[in-house]
Length: 351
Image 1 (cartoon, helix red, strand yellow):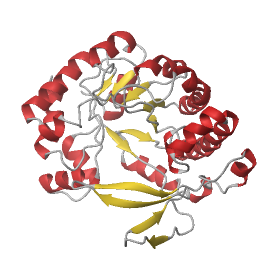
Image 2 (cartoon, rainbow, N blue to C red):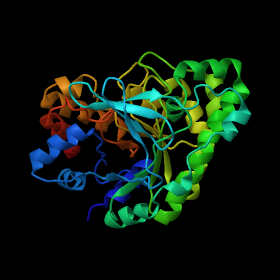
Image 3 (tube, one colour):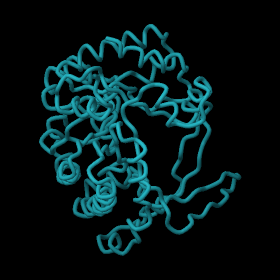
């Protein structure tokens, strides 16, 4: 008898050989729409069932006061996020992308002003929805998370000001990151409590790398992000979950730092220098579970199904030795990825 999805994913994180490589699916609405049409179904859940996907993402929806929507001068709907920033949705020819139009902490300069700002209220989220979703997906591995230590802050203040503050006002910048993580610890903590031991993965998103290298030196990464990464990893571990760090880009220089903070897995393994699967497995394969890796920038939108399957087989053969790998794309499937290439990626699970 084979493993359940939950057992399969947990085996991968524990570096035990699963009955087959576990997999996850993530994509923009347009990609899911194509898959629903292909399978003749009408929900994301049904797509996951049809494709035998092992991981299910869940969250606590916002249920606080109504958030305003207003019109920009050129006629776009400008939405307000529960964190106070505003954004418009821009169609890029394949799917919609959110563009931040207002940064609520852009003019903030002192720690006292940060403390006085109205931070998101953890009471404004529906944690009972987490328990309901857990009950609907008992056999799947369950994952929560999104905002991390750094990336979400760039919706509150633009990146240029943030980087200048990190260099010239480090105490202020650290307080900003700490305030963000204080909310996250409460928010994720309540989700864990609502799930009552059923969540398997906490995944937070912080893009510390570019396609050519790091955004920060190792010393600066340790200075601003190590403490809070460890706090979030400790939270996951207290609730019997694994901590999965998402970071795009060439982040090999900080992989050792992440391991020191208690990180259990790394996503998305973008196709950039230093993130080749052979080297990652050789140097870190006994300490990290690798998550993703099949290239969404060139291969999936432009390659043949045979080439996609061959690359997925390479990743499985390299990274799935003694567990330690969860198959999936290196980013969300975008609207320009053909359905046949999505299916070809998961066809590699036969090996």
